[in-house]
Image (cartoon, rainbow, N blue to C red; front, side, top):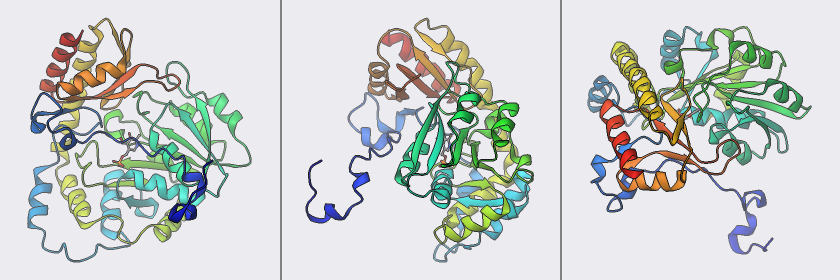
Length: 365
Ligand SMILES: Cc1ncc(COP(=O)(O)O)c(C=O)c1O
């Protein structure tokens, strides 16, 4: 290892090789590099909502008079609103700047350097990112070939040092579900389980009612996907009340900004509109899947979320992703992870996005 000089020698040495998180590409960074103007880029790489947010949100934010005042640090209003939405009492609820912030906060609460975190891979990359940043040792339990969690292997991976078991349901990037029976078996180990339901509104399966019964269950949700608020960063978690108390004490003050609070309030007033958009995405997901299935060099995986993972059977996924990007269509690629060699993940967009993507795929081949 090369010796660090100057200010770098004061930095945590374990971060020298820290790779960071490879976030989705922002269209504005592609100005002049793709065949279409930036505003015509079709963004299907981050599972965002193609219908945007409720117009009530935009109107309320434009009229909001108090951006100069800090939000309520105790989150009284937003927790009450989320109680109404989830049916879970406010004493179980903490809101965050995106559910990512709550993943980080939970790890900060539980992890001492060297503690173990169980991750059912392949899965959402933030679990690894945040766990490593907190100094946790990652214990990877590979999923089965159909992306099901290997519960036996997971239980065998538990040690005295285990602090958190991560489980995304539906899983990103596979879009597959873990059965309620498997979830209960994992909960019955007694170890803390962080069940990430970021795509709940698309899968419509939840463990939220179990939060009041299980001392070791933590459920994460977000407004990024179904409510179209990814840019405003609002998520929340359902926790045992003691964990809520800790999280409220260790979080940064004012972690959900007033724009996020206004957006949640207005979104929940416009729930029928937002759920109609969710339904449109679900309908389009079925058509998109059927269209992808007709392409003989792609193998789409049935999904319960707002994206579809596909194995690329002929040619290089990396090249395919780049060629689509050149045409102004952004998708996510997975090139060399175990179980994910040569895969692409595409968010479900509007019908015209499906049409443009299928046309581009046919031109590329
Ligand atoms: C499984 C999963 N959890 C959490 C998130 C992050 O959501 P948020 O925007 O609330 O931070 C995502 C976003 O892609 C996700 O796929």
